[in-house]
Length: 80
Image (tube, rainbow, N blue to C red):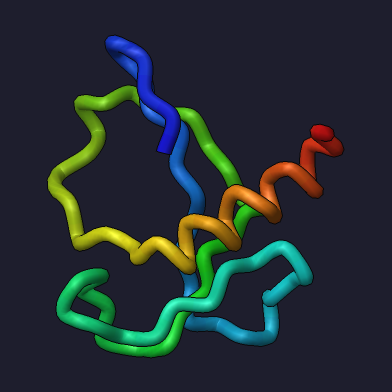
């Protein structure tokens, strides 16, 4: 999540495995992330929205998922 004073950039999360791509980050359900089913963070589905549209936080991801997420963002944006 990338934040400014009024906006936040989010990635979509889905349980639909048929939409998966090589850049998605898999998430297994846990108390930390609050998910009930195996899901994918869809890094090819990013959106920037107004913070006022966010109703709450579901959970958070662990260090290993964050490392994979960052690595895949580097690939998507072709950063060195």
